[in-house]
Structures are given as structure tokens and as C-alpha cells.
Length: 94
Image (tube, rainbow, N blue to C red; front, side, top):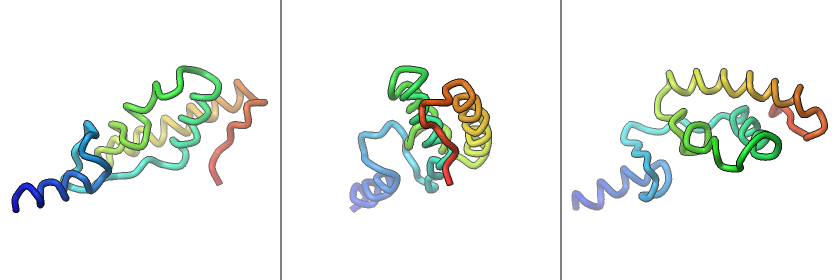
């Protein structure tokens, strides 16, 4: 019975194979970071390179303090990407 409860708690944020365990609840990836990661993957670097930090299960979403810092970083980075790659189709989310 304990195993079942632990399994349910660990899988609340995704799958058991994730390297992140969310026992107190998860904070989701922001739309601006989704856009920034997509733009980076398309224009600047190796696709998936930002996932450990800014991806859906990244370190940015472990707590509110990290969430706030990462969201601000994503906004700044996305603005720079849009300026640097005006024809790439990158945009701020609506």
C-alpha cells in the first residue's frame, strides 16, 4: 500500500523516469519560456539543450523563487532572440 501511495505522489508531475520528484506540487513551465526554448531550438543552438533548466520538467519549475527568476530570464532572452533573428518567426506568447 505504501508503494502505491508513493507511486501516485511521484507521478503527479509526470512520469517516474523523470529526474525530478514533486512531492509538494509542481510549478509549470511558463508560456514565455516555452516560446523562448522553441526559438532557441530553432535559431541558436542544439534542440533540447535548454530542457534541463527551462524545459517542461526543468529545474526552473521546482519552486516559486526559481520560477520567477527563470520567467524573467526567458522574457529577456526571447526579446534578444526576436531582435537577433527577426525572420525566424519567434514571438512573445499572446
